[in-house]
Length: 261
Image (tube, rainbow, N blue to C red):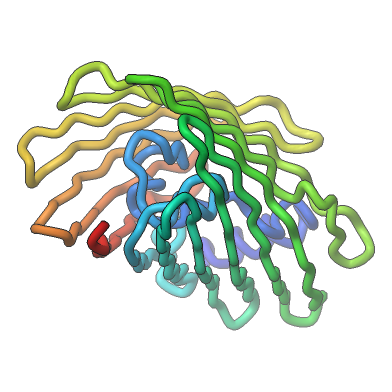
């Protein structure tokens, strides 16, 4: 019960900073601190609209180990010629707090470049405190050259408002390096209005064709993530955990299926 009260206090006291939290949208992102280039999946489009993977992915977790705060995600992507299409939905559910985000995305790829736009409908309600919704536009860009991939995304490029106050604009940049056919390394940063830069590092190692290990570290605030991916034909099952400075571990599980190209 104390954990729930602490979470609600954080939500209310931080006001707009807690609305539209940059939470990981899958077990993969939980393990990689939301660096999405190191292991792309359909949920990558929720972070950078320029990235699209063909398939479906569903995920579930209890935020910070609090069983009264489940977080559900569903993401799907389809690629047709040079265009990518994305549809997703995320829901945080609690009797005192509810937040949902319905997402649409479109991207276009030309040679080594890709650009995309995402549209989000955000609904947020804190019981006996406030209720409102907002329409948000996100923008993304990616570039790939041999073993290096770089991505930049701006969340809330539309500078949309909630409760008559502007929602924060979040800048996300990352670069992924393919060290070998079995290993990758990524680094990036996240910058939100009114906050310092948050630096992130992530690594991936494919032990076998059917198994991969993911790990990451985030500085400001300090957090660690680790996960394991099991690949079975066109399906994958991912389990990960991530630390928090004050709350318990977040355990995450995802199941994905890749469509035929």
